[in-house]
Length: 194
Image (cartoon, rainbow, N blue to C red; front, side):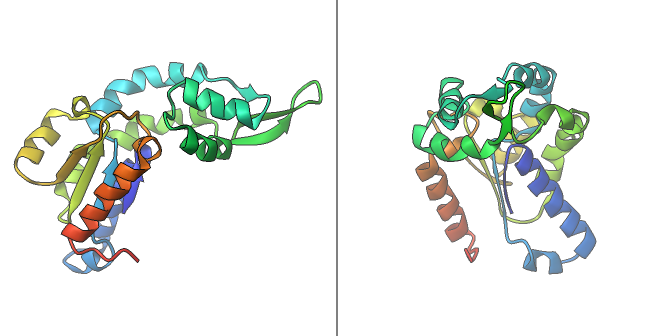
């Protein structure tokens, strides 16, 4: 199971749900490992009070796909131009503005999900640590670790790698590094990559 940010929280909670439902050893036939990217309960909870403001400051529409890509790079959402050319256009949809002009607007209304933000991250650390499968946490910086994760990592309860010179979307900023860490994780724990 693999997930980034909120997707990492979902992957963790889904894995826990499968473990709870199937009980015993049978569930490990379905999920061989958990690989989450740049999601830590403590950091996420600390950032939540600022998220509404951050989301509200984004432009609501763009005149072209090129301007979407430019925004992605200039805002440091994505630091890798090649990745931004792929990921940023996928986040918008064409619309017609009030003047009849074609514009590009965000595909997803992030603020509509605000009532669920706290729930997504509450209990994430303990749920992650309680899972009895190989686990990997990939982070954009050591400062993202909370106390419980730091202690658990020192006890060898999961693997952790910090990737330098990246922002929150590590997999886009340094896809080569993420692929390398993921491959090492699969090989170390003999997880079939099918």
